[in-house]
Image 1: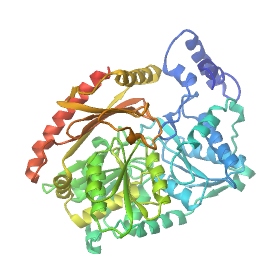
Image 2 (image 1 turned 180 degrees about the horizontal axis):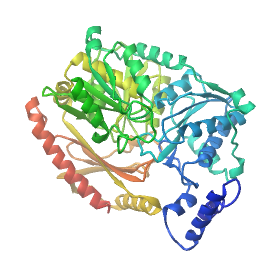
Image 3 (image 1 turned 120 degrees about the horizontal axis):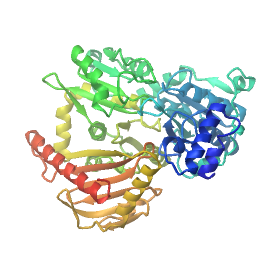
Image 4 (image 1 turned 120 degrees about the vertical axis):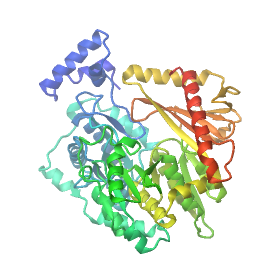
Length: 584
């Protein structure tokens, strides 16, 4: 790996344009003067692989997304597949963002140059369909060009292996070594779509792929007992938030008998500028404002929205007064987990539910009460996919559901990434059967316990921000937190996923089979926990809270006041925890 100054200097010569070279020279001058700025960071510090590959702002330099940094990632990944697989092949998809199509075609051309067979989607495509396509074509891996729900100036490159899941050990480190070992920018082949080699090795993915996905979905057993007439009459308002989901989601719902699906007109077409929203993220209430507006006009029972690459799903359900309740990611996932867990199971089969360590423990209570095996994994859907591989390898073991609090769920075994399509179908099927999902959610709380969660994100840009994040987590590592009161509850255990050390009542067995990760989880009395980790894809440090109510509600009327008490506890706990970490 080159030193920062060598990274900068490598952009001051061929193959870069005179414009890029002069910008790099300016960055080098600033670097020599000790100036820290976005310009210096762009040329000095490379984008690093996080939970989802590389992601960053589009621009010049090794720290930005451009044809060279994407080409470098593609060359490292594809050369690894070429050298380790017999008859290597790859599936490539892209979203609606700036440069997405160009980055996808660049990656396809690099694959062709290396003699790797390429299946390229001809238009914007949901990420879960890319995961499915890898398995459908029995490919060696996959690439999707997306920055998920980031603002328009971002893009990303995500890599997948033959099982349809994202990179995991040991392949990830070997691939990252390949990528970081590419120091000569002139070695990245950039060929045209009209090139003979491109035409020979790059094939277009046809409509049969999605049709087979729908057939698999039909066989997956997630449909409810709802009558065809109920499905036909149910009014659904849907927004792809200018992303990839539009045509696919509508076609899927119609395939399953939902005829009244209305796409938000202002947001239905792919548009990488995301003109109607500040952030194209279904986790943000503001992003769903147009959904709610049209849902009220249509008197729809539900509105749903997906992020630009259609792997995350947000929802709002109609209340008796005509207003809409926005459900959070833990609530949506818990409704799905409870519904699937409570259904009749095949005799002699062992069912598994997989969730991340920052997802609500309500799902653990649901699994245990229904005799379902539960597994906690690190944040990142790739770890859920890896666990699915283990489940599949055991006789009579079946994957039931996987999810994470950040609006990502998977209720089917034939995709290996979060999937808003199958999740949306399951959610609407539950609504069609239960008719009132808010009552059903209260029933879940009464049966398994009342839990409330929160996520606090702090953005710290640049290399100085990264250093502060690192120091804050390191300072928590050195503190003795056992017995300390946080949010009025006593700390009973501390789990350090980096050192894989458990203090207090915590058991080191929780780390079994897990790679090391810079995460600290503090468990409090009364089934509550706080988790801190740096984001793998954004310049943020995140604190996750999950608190169970100390008093278990006996009837629905008790839930609102207990919910408020939990909210107050969490606000207090988050503040105290951030102060302990030196972040407030």
